[in-house]
Image 1 (cartoon, rainbow, N blue to C red):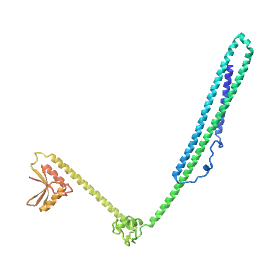
Image 2: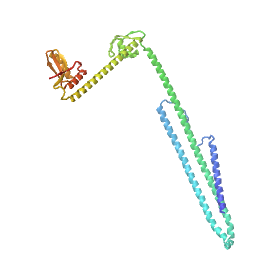
Image 3: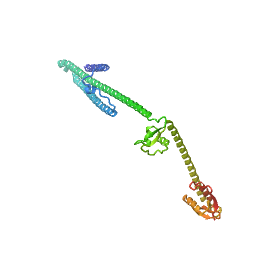
Image 4: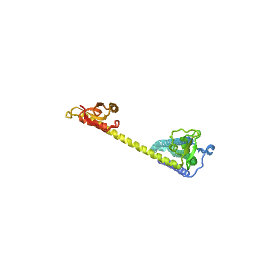
Length: 403
């Protein structure tokens, strides 16, 4: 009897599983077919179906697209939440049904145990023949009830599975609709962007044509022409008007680029050949000035380096003065002036350059001497420094014994 009970339960579970498997296979087959939009799927409203005007405002398009994406995400999240809730309820119901089936099976085993003991006893078994004969009927009724209960549970499971599949269908349809809307919005935005770019390119081409026409209109004349200065005219304005550098226009009229023009003044508008020639001459002059500046900088750097080197040698010579050097002080004569006034003028120049200067009258003139230096080596280094100093501009300095 126990075996029959368990067999019936197993058969019921197999039947229920087969029904569920058939429903799932049927659902998968139906999912591959195009389905009409059910009432649960949100139908697009007349406002959404209506064509929206294109706009070239990219920022506005971005804000509208972001808002629609947020709404679609909210709808998808709500549908996922409902599907998850449905799955949770289904799992709970299946667990309860399984627990109930186990409890009934245990109760049936417990009720069957006393009856088996009564069958083993000889006298008591005969006295209770009639009740025992009724026991199989009771067991059969319990088996039928259990089978009906299993069928009911299987039907409930099928209903829950159908609901779950319907929810999944609804969710898939919503996602498909959202994807279609997103693609349509992206396509519309791409078309709007393409149209805006085409309009921008057309405007640029139009501006280029207008600029080319304006430039051709304001090209310098083929031959030089006279122009009468009007109110508000200036060299810069006229140079822009005739498409030439202001320096070229000023050079053609022997004027400075910053010269102000007088009302009624007559100036010459150079031809294109003259503009090109003057521009080449101006470029050559600018290049010559730049080369000259670079040479002057190189000479100044070379002179500065020579002066620095001479100063360094002088400092080292002053440190290395020894007792074996010629005794006494030495100076560097830088000039022999004809009179005291000339000597004072030269002395002032050397003093402004940072040297110690003295003058002394001789029979040949007035000496201008820089120094003194202790030791001849230091005096020679001082002489080299003076000859390389661009501030004093002399190369005839020589060492003499001071006293």
